[in-house]
Image (cartoon, rainbow, N blue to C red; front, side, top):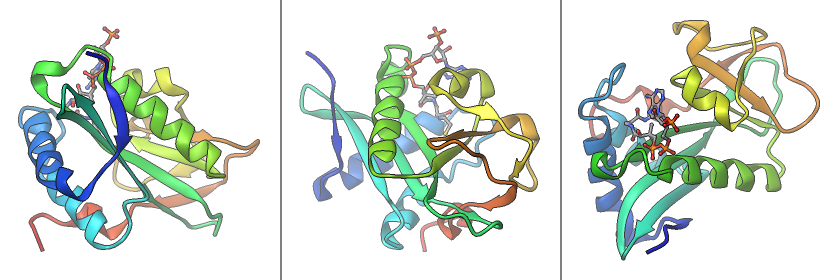
Length: 170
Ligand SMILES: CC(C)(COP(=O)(O)OP(=O)(O)OC[C@H]1O[C@@H](n2cnc3c(N)ncnc32)[C@H](O)[C@@H]1OP(=O)(O)O)[C@@H](O)C(=O)NCCC(=O)NCCS
């Protein structure tokens, strides 16, 4: 059965929460709040893109995209993540399909670029690179990567949406 990547429906919300929780349960560098983040972004109207991976009628993966603020004032930059695949389905290319489709969607929506916080070895395969000119304060630079859809990378500090700083369901 092929994987279907599609935008979330309102009746996917509980599954997305559960998948996110399960995916990050044993993840390194996680505060185990990622499911709260997805809910907070949605509630704030800041879930720019929310794609699910559906297999045989069940949701097995999810990726979120939300706007980020740049101190340079540049607009139309976005943050990719959280990305979650149910542990039993990891390593089968589902995360890659979610990320590639999310990036393709943002590029065709005239986004200027995307940033990501995560394992550099994983995200570099999707075109993300470390860019010393864009800084996310408080994290080691190598874990913060960027991908411009245009021909320039701004020099600026980057701030994720407030939804990322919640530690429980509001
Ligand atoms: C990260 C995640 C979304 C990847 O999804 P996936 O469907 O397993 O990924 P794919 O099958 O497309 O790719 C698998 C490859 O990614 C690599 N990979 C997966 N997680 C990785 C990580 N944290 N660091 C480095 N590489 C990683 C695997 O080693 C594998 O490499 P290979 O292709 O060379 O064998 C999934 O493993 C997951 O949900 N992890 C827990 C939550 C998490 O850490 N999310 C990312 C932070 S936002």
